[in-house]
Length: 229
Ligand SMILES: C[S@@+](CC[C@H](N)C(=O)[O-])C[C@H]1O[C@@H](n2cnc3c(N)ncnc32)[C@H](O)[C@@H]1O
Image 1 (tube, rainbow, N blue to C red):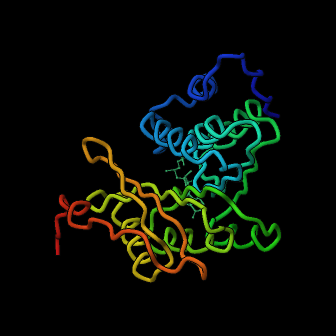
Image 2: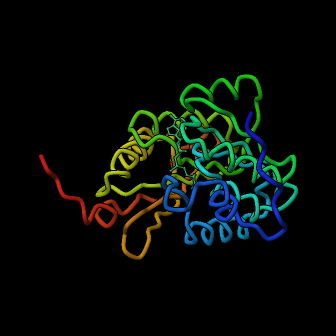
């Protein structure tokens, strides 16, 4: 029988906790970095009404920690993850220790678990962070499934919208499809200085708010896209 890890000390970070349990930073899959933490903090500061958050893609818990920390103790968050990594369970232990009763993790393929969850728990989220499977269909359906759980002001952040990167070109297609089909309103596009990664801010269209917003600067976003046939 495995023993639960020793409790956290007051200052132990998520990285330190995972490393102590055999999962050093370099062994973790792609996850949010300091630039994301900064962006989340800024977005939540500008929109202090955000109190209900959903994310697809928990991984080790980095983005969940950043969002919960930035949003405050009166925030609730639900993460969806297929739970393919052993360290995701440890990340959840850390989040629960730091943010007691604020976080729920739903295991399973999000293309099924999100609609199932919403059918049983109809609710609205103020912020939705899409950062799960990177296939076109998976990302596209993740975007669409949350539309029913959005209100007029809900902000959607879609990570890895980077058309020239192996990790991002399918998410990019999914995002463009959702825009072309007028499910989304474009708000802004962001990228790291070296253009190693990009993400977008959007809202959902609705009856009261049909397609509006700005047209993305596709030429700029695609400036490093090489067509290989
Ligand atoms: C890039 S990581 C998420 C990183 C995390 N959001 C962060 O920034 O710290 C992607 C996560 O999505 C999960 N994932 C991949 N395909 C999925 C699917 N179809 N349904 C649910 N989760 C999935 C993986 O297990 C992985 O933990």
